[in-house]
Image: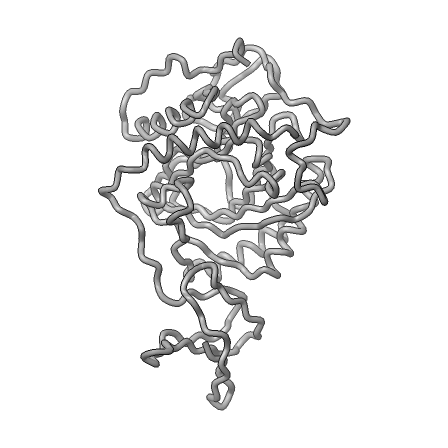
Length: 359
């Protein structure tokens, strides 16, 4: 990698290596020119003039998609059983349900939107091999739009105030990931996040397009009831991400559809063992028993109060499927069931409704 001066003189920068882990960040200025050359063949791979803050990828990562590969069912089932056990080990909670919907401040949404607009064409395949089956990367390519650390820190720190207000807890930044771009057919296995660092988090929908059916974020509350939340660009979903199972089991639908998210994570300030502790005084009690629940609206409408329960504190996002998980095998059955429904197969509903007696 060379910085090219106004007279065409080259100034060498560190040599680039393969892989996302070897990303190099360079502070420069608008109008500066860079040249990327193969060190062995001396072939010029890319000439780039800086027009805006962004990330460029040199070369292409080979796609891991294999339409004939159906060998992941066992891995998915084992993963879901493991994730169920993980979510039960977290003692502390912060809110009644474990999630809530909100909205980004306009200036942060504008900043993220502008960054996405400028850099979407430079997206690269996200590296998923040997990282598990949390995204169905073997069926659909998943893309990544990297952002500079300094800019991500601005976004994350600003959002932290919103999450502190939601949890009523002083927090510290731990991780901000993305932007990740999902495309038609993408699915996410239900899971929980890293326990030491991901106590309270937000999902940020930066952009979406050509989506023909809402691609809901599925969150299980503290009683393991499924909620399905519809998001639009600029929306955020707060969630207790090491405690509450979450995913997107239903495939993203729409010809040429895409969905771009970021994920910002926090934990109680100075307390990596937060998950081992009982709730401090004043923490809202988890909402467990909400009485009888009935489907009162269309079964294909989400975030609209289609399910009515005796206790209105359950909110408007309870899944019309009225599914409550009781173990990891239930989660796997749900993963299979929603795919079969999308493929037009008839699925028995008996046994999948909310059973308040077991809560």
